[in-house]
Image (tube, rainbow, N blue to C red; front, side, top):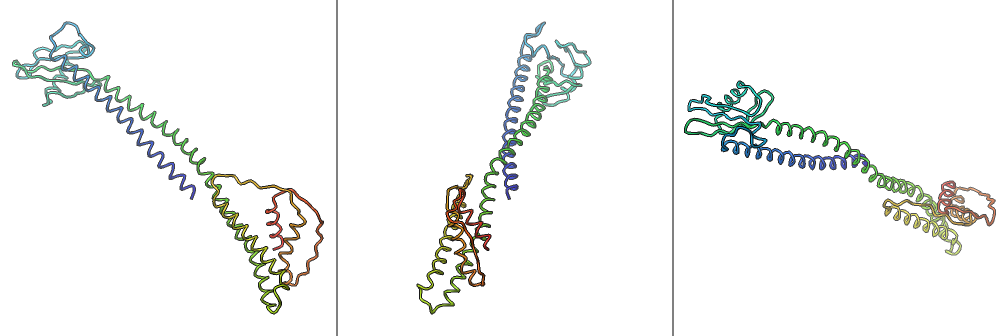
Length: 303
């Protein structure tokens, strides 16, 4: 039962933590991607409408390509501030022309580009911006998320397992104590019930006798009912225990009287079973300990 409870606690805890991690990482990834897209779009528009310059005026222009085509999509002029070949530029132009939309993304070898097309009276102008760093940033971000998220979830699993064991252990301990006490109480109640039953049988068998003459048996019944009442009180106290350690209550008591009283409570049982018990109990024998436990042990021995 407690193992199932622990597993359920860990599963729920880890599920919630995983959902939170995924939500946080997704938001960070989306914000990073959106920011990169806006920067790329801004760079494309800036380069598209800026006048031609002999040198790049911003970092985005330094990694850009510009191509001007006629109405038949033939290249009129193409240049780049990057150190790339004309063949490389022609590949980019060809892929952009094949795309029907005015903007999009293409890949040439291991590099990624975003492009923007604009129709002019003389044909088409195409601007390319290298977005390879942004693409790599997103890939690295995913790798970091998987690495950090995996390590974090493993650590959180170990922490959850530790706290689950620590939280359930006191509950399990109290449950086991209650279970053990109930089992002990069932055995303890048998003795006074047996004594009461025997005394009642003796009283019933001698119904013609006066109450005064049978006072001894009645006193035994009263003592056993008191003992049963104490057992019930202990059971109620144990049922209310909540993570608290129960410590034995030691006191100095007269062991001689305790043993004598216990033996007297079995007088009816001995009488009915024709048992002649001879005892030699030293008077005024005191002991420091838990009196109730001694009484229980003595009752078990007499049974």
